Image 1 (cartoon, rainbow, N blue to C red):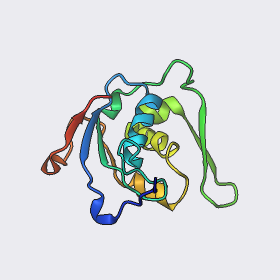
Image 2 (image 1 turned 120 degrees about the horizontal axis):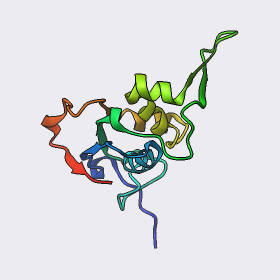
Image 3 (image 1 turned 30 degrees about the vertical axis):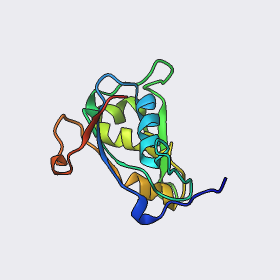
Length: 142
């Protein structure tokens, strides 16, 4: 059997809406990363972006799972000398829940230019409203 390579005209992208209310952030991110990569499609190719768009609403109601400590710090570096910065997981989730969800999903995508391209198809909103009604997104229950 021959391996097929999907062509650009064969790739169709759908829009999905995911409600993050009372979902553990890690389990939510796993399912969203699969959709962004396109692993749910029969034409999946690991070197191409065949995934769909995902809109996450109610990100402020997402929760940390039992093993995750809210006081555990998250580190990043600005690139300048002495530029190490940190914030606790709980504080990031309370202040900027959309950034916390994006950061978690980004960790589950490839750490390459292809993964950064896939991440652009993710839209996260803290409340229940989003401006993507014109795309006619399907409600996705994970």
